[in-house]
Image (cartoon, rainbow over all chains, first blue to last red):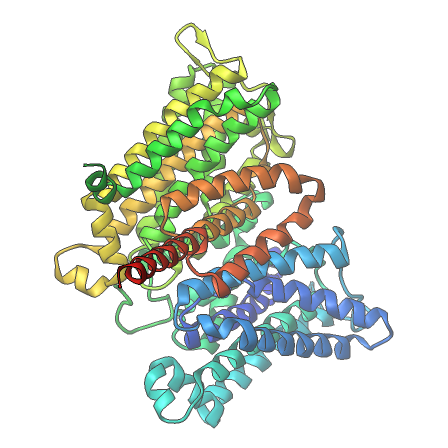
Length: 290
Length: 329
């Protein structure tokens, strides 16, 4: 019992890091536009697929993952700056546009990579560490490490750098930011690009431990969003903690639900948080109500 | 008098024209398959008109419309086929299920500012989809539920496609008239006020979350009713019909029709039904078309068909007055 529990707890934390990374992507974009990016899950899938293609053309695994994430974030930033920035003043339409984008990206993923689930080979020749009787692969450790790394990078970005401060200024008062010489559209494109990078990086490091198929983006996006809701959206980087919480709840839920229903847990958690504590479990301040 | 009616009840006028056209539509086709397609067109018009209320009048995005449609279909199919209850009971239970699910999803998320409803509906769509697949003793699982009984009222069974068309016709038109009445009346005005100036509406004593929830549940009931009609038309339901893609396609068609225009939605329903027949051969790739259509309309043709139509009328009017002025001088 103890060992099973520990094993589930650890795999929950590792999957939770993925949800956390995706959640930070949601949060960052939401904070600069007030909109939800429905294509966030598709970035994860494309990050994974692109890394697989790059790796199969001879690039070492980690380089393929990084390059895929960079390429996707560049493309996302361009798409936002050229097409989507006109919608920035009307979040409803921006949300609709990302819904359309997600359908397009999912269909393209099907067209180029096919119906079968795909994954990268292990980055560390299946090496693993043993913790008492529980086995943790290096690939799993790297997922968690990536999550922690980005958590601190973003903390640094938002608190210490002028770019991070400018993003927060755009979030708080777009008009004022404009009059102080900032270009909101540029910063919004930047957050979209950052969201794509985080999603794609999550997909890349997830790839060696779990195969994804072209339609996996829907559920992954939903879980990342739940992570952001749990942490309360206010501080983008704290969505990482939300992801870990969700990962653990989901992983331990196998004690109560048949595994076919595992994916429903995230949705139930999401609805429960929206109903009983819409400001997020990790926030202290007042309620964000109409 | 005619002028007054058209100005006071613009949506009702649209529905009356629509009802007249649809009354005679089956006479234009000869083959039973096409009659069934026409029934599907009426069902789609209910789906799009109800989704239009959520988008255009409540200013919200729902990505569960296809799933709630599916819920109505499954509830009605299971009750009439597995439990041998009459069609009327199945239809009523479908409507009730649409009401309840909308309440469960809408009540928490519509209190919040922002687009939480959109994500919550995505979640509920996902839940329903999993349930359709996993509860195979009840739903038939991935293979779907076959042998659904035809609709019947009393001893009369609607087995002939033409008789079923007119059953759907009566239900659809009653529903559309109800929608038009509500939108032309106090409720429509309140919803428009809430959508365009939420704070001002609040000051007038209108509770925005109440009106949004009202619109959302009303639309949910209609979607589920449409689902019940669909189940007894095709007499087969399977999970893949009600996936997220359907909800996104419906969203794209409402936006393309003109997000707050009932007439636009009805035209979009015709286009959608026709397109669906045509693009079926491309399978999933056809979704690329709907995705790009949605993106293009949102970015470049805001207002959709209805908006363009209005602009065209304005241009024509403008040209006519100029002409009159020209001949007068």
